[in-house]
Image (tube, rainbow, N blue to C red; front, top):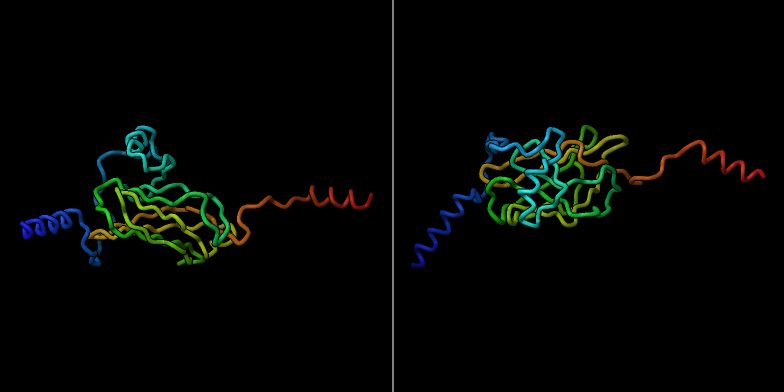
Amino acid sequence: SYYYTFIEAFQSQRNCHRLYPQITSHRFSTQLPDKTTDGTGVVTAQHKDNRTSTGDIPADLRATDSPNFLVSSLPAHWRCNKILPHAFTVVALGDVCDGVLVTVMAGNDENCSAELRNATALMTSRTARFNDLRFVGRSGRGKSFTLTITVFTSPPQVATYHRAIKVTVDGPREPRCEYTQHTCLLTWNV
């Protein structure tokens, strides 16, 4: 009976594609039959209602270029090496077993591989949560990072989230304006 239990466990892992990946030329897995977005990258209300019934999937999901994965939204502009306001989450729409490694990489044309902290997570109930993801590298003035999410199934699946977040030293701040400088000069001279 122990022998059969071991064989069943091995076969269930094989069916879930949890074995360590081999390098292949496949970039994406097959598409899902249903349409999950409305064309703008935001998940449609009907699909969101179907998915949020599980409870752990956040309601503000964004589409990636892979039809098998959704990601939680990120702030448009953020300060480097500062914790995000909420955990970054990757949601698998297909069958991905628990314990599969998920990594996030960031880059753009100026900084091809930005430094990230805590950029690995494990898939649990088709959800990978990056609780303390930090962007240490900066995206550059007026530039945003593109995130590359790799799910190490066999074969590995890759999803890309374009123009995900702008990371600068100062983070978001009030724009400088001529009016405030003139106001300060007028009050100083009086």
